[in-house]
Image (cartoon, rainbow, N blue to C red; front, side, top):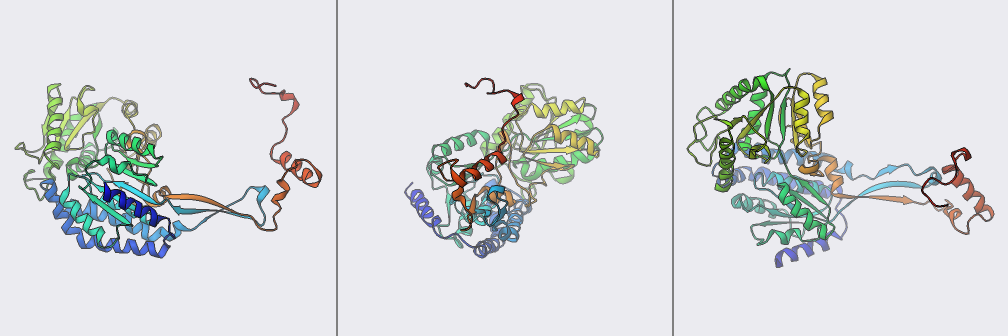
Length: 482
């Protein structure tokens, strides 16, 4: 707690100094890019050891290259983002005066990182914080100690602790971190913990960005080829074994196509992993015994309540769990209400597209939505009648890796974002600046009111902007005393 409080005070003091220039911010991002490239293989090996097996390709593509895309976009655009935005003054104040919005760093940003993507979910918010001129304190997850050491060293080699401080397992009580009076806080994780973070932030009136996941649906419209939809949804479900916040949580499929979809999904899995899941260089393990036990518990609960469960490969009960396709899902099953966050694909049948849309609408708003249809009218219908943090059409997840757009949730899946210009503005104070030209006579608005030449101007101004209503409309509005 002493080190935590000390570094927070140092960062707060440093944040009150002169803001960094655009060139300085670009240089910081350049150095961070170099470090990501230097440490990419070391990180991939470390996080694989934390998971008990995670493919290097997935770690490099999702965490390293994904971070580089966010970083490169910010490097290219930060100078333009920082420019003051000129605005038109009200007509009364037009003429020689000027009005603009400047983007001022908020100060110190607290970043709380989840275990599933410790690098990407640290660097992504950090890039935005640095681009906006802030300082940052990062709390890494306890579940990935080896990856944490790499991330701490990667950042510690280029940033002083009064600019970027990393805490990796050295905070006994996570509440000590969220209790700090940050200027902004970013949390990625579950809605349950998100509520605790938001409650702690409220004590200090700290604004928060929450990315909370949820049950992201994939709707397969009747016009779309079932086999292709199954292939793409399966890919989304096996990437990191479904331990991704935007992984398709469940599939809504025309009732008559459930068997064909399930067969195609199983065939897709076997195409991806012809040797099964025991080859740990090819398939991602669950991060630890606790999370593997949770997946087994979801399957046991569904089986006991009458679901049909089809494993896509042999399984020796270890933490490398193959995809399980579950049909016959009922509302009382845990997989119908809990975010799966693992290699289980519930397949739910529907009779009409309206029924599928209603099913999505009856659930808390998801972080992502996937719609499979070749007809623009169908896609527009679903998009118009549903709410989600982001959408990919005819595939899964790819809206997230495009760094030019915001990434975040809505409602139960969170709020706020930290990618692109929207993220830059979220971590900046948009400060209006009005410049009164010395020749502009604002003193015409001074009291005493309605006396002399000032009174003539004041009456003209009031009548121009707020005309008296027509007498035929009556006198005092109903309910307001005379």
